[in-house]
Length: 318
Length: 316
Image (cartoon, rainbow over all chains, first blue to last red; front, side, top):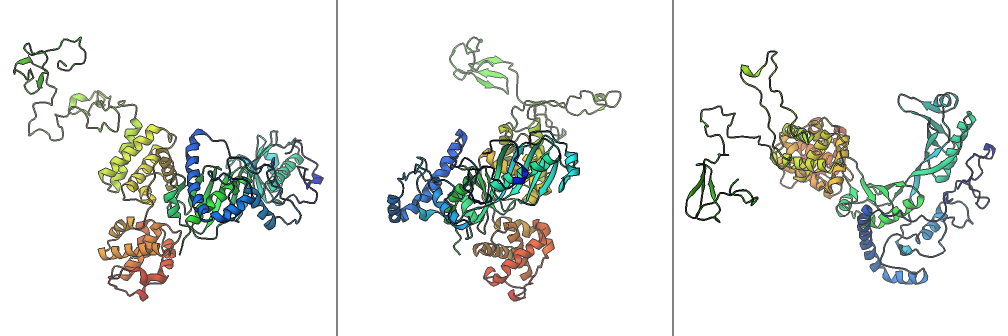
């Protein structure tokens, strides 16, 4: 991560903030990991959540065990070649991640010779997560639509001067106590508060969000404030994808009552609150799924891999 | 007081011949009688019954045999409250015209808000003529939510409206959010939010609404005959079975089905009228109607008498 808290000179605006990349890779590749690099392990279980987690895990277990029994022969061959497995737990594996991101490099990254930057773990399996065979993975990758991040510029700001002197800034203190600034390059919007804290929204990837935040900080710096770049943190990530088949929401709400809320009078989609990666999914009849609430990209992928077999079970047959 | 065995230190009145016999209290005569020998042991026991002198021609409103309010003890805890009634007669007013003995408030100070909410629930239910069982269920739900204190920050009226909505749903006669909005001062958005929070707090769930739940109410409000109502129910059910209206709210589908059924019968209703009763916009009815119109001949029940044949149904 960015160790130095001061901004690099703006002339090298395209310099990678991390500097540990192989040369020639454009910064905006969606493959670029922004964090420490390892697939983050799921969040610690609080005692109140563990019961619901168990329930969700059991429900996913049942679904996956049914599918596993059907395809057992293929599984045995593949699993003999792959890592060792423990077939009891049926959580989606971090071990599955390399397979997903192999497909990702084929479809999304434009570079031919890139090894998947999302690391394949040296130890093949963590004890919690079993290998789910490759034939089970959905092959659909959720696309990120929005990233919300915050950063502390580390100094008090005078919003009035910022609003008067900066371009594309609006400030209406009676309506909202922050300057709303927009830039075009990663098309983003920032809310800049007088305490020096800033919220940056609208970016489509983690790198773009960071770059945009740095651009805003640069603008504030040029206006004469001693802006720094402290504690950049991504607060929320929103992704969406399409499972390409219609879904019976009424069936889904009957079986997953503790996690789903479907009120057609209030909202046409089903709101599924997944416990294990703490993600909220909006599932629609058309088959489109919106995932939100993630702090890291892997949570979105993991949540989608968890929900995909469940949705397949509720496919509309007509 | 004498015959209960609370404390052995208290002098207990017993029959001299049968000290172990439990005395029977005859409160009408004010006697304590030994059941073994019939001896009257204590007399002039104070009568705790009702006022004796109840004449039949007394004012029927004031029932003197009531010594306390008839509040339901299950709901508000401890209804041992006494209210000073409004004064009648000239003597109860002091020189300025204010009533003396003004202390009608400050009773049951805990749960005052709860009593207020119960009153509000009764008012709301009264506006849409809900039966007593729904009101009781609503009161119970409100009490559970109130005691849990997890929704303490929300307006009590909002929680009361949401409890009313849940009670109607649980009793199998759901009301739409808009109908509850019509009798409450809270917005639909806030009622919806409180509804979800209450379901989470009480860890209950409710069944999904179906088109048939609303048919009888909407059709009666539109004064449609039974044939049309049955036809509309059939149309809506078939439309959902054949998946002609994916993703549409059941209320909109029901409204469109009522429109189709009424247009095929002698009692034609306009989209605007149906929209007013059902709480859906007439463009919504139009959208859903367009989806079910192509399969209209399949949707009607087989024994339906068409006033307007199927091919002459309006096409919007």
